[in-house]
Image (cartoon, rainbow, N blue to C red; front, top):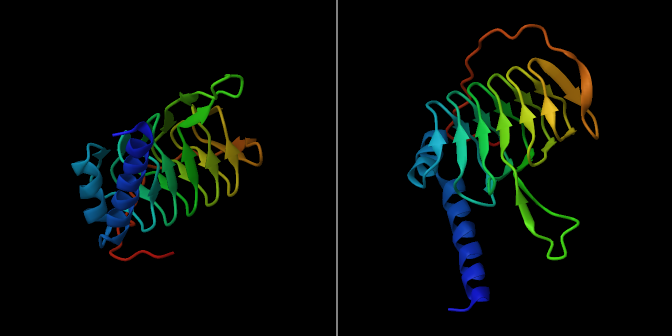
Length: 182
């Protein structure tokens, strides 16, 4: 089997995986599917429809967290999401990029770590190697790279510190719908 064919077969397998993942009814079925292929997915995780993945493994999602409609997760370098965290509609989280100075344009993998009680509002972009500490908020449409401290609010392109969030109360999310579509 040629290298080109192996790559194409692998991409087709990921495509089929995503189709199956997204037609499963409800968050519990999607969470079970992700667990079956080796991810650590906590209890009561809300995985809304049209979740897109570049790689079906290397993810850890804490209990009561929600990954909303149309989120794109590039977990090639690993993604860890804490408990009670919400990733808004159509966000993208990348854990791999390319070395722009490499003659071979090599892939560089850097894990993304997102803490507990974090809110990432819709249409935000989280870049490889980013660490978002517990209680942080990322405002809509932001491009986040680097470190976001605990209970800090970041926003903009590129995302910059806005202010501190009031001390976060421990809350429990529950957005595990059977047919979430918005």
